Image 1 (cartoon, rainbow, N blue to C red):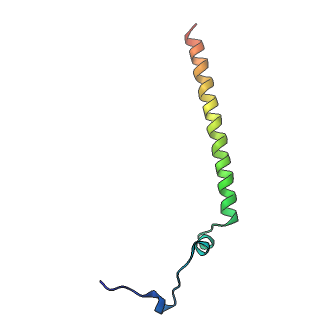
Image 2: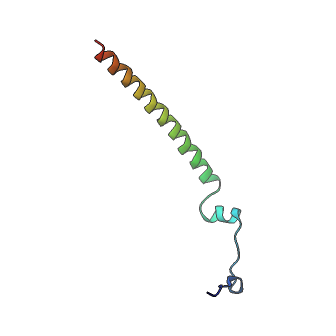
Image 3: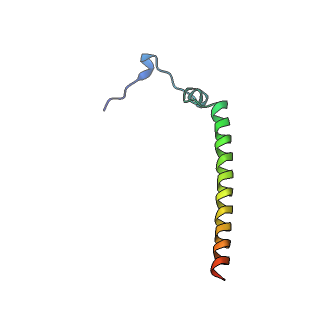
Length: 64
């Protein structure tokens, strides 16, 4: 199998900073990650609270 040499065609390697810019990364992506992470944390806490409250409520009802 032959190796295709793209350097002769003007193709350059990209470093991680270049890839981050091309793939839509950077500050906007970082901010979105913070917002999504915060939302995930809030939702997780909310569902844990609802689950514990429902469990306690059902235990109290069935113990009567």
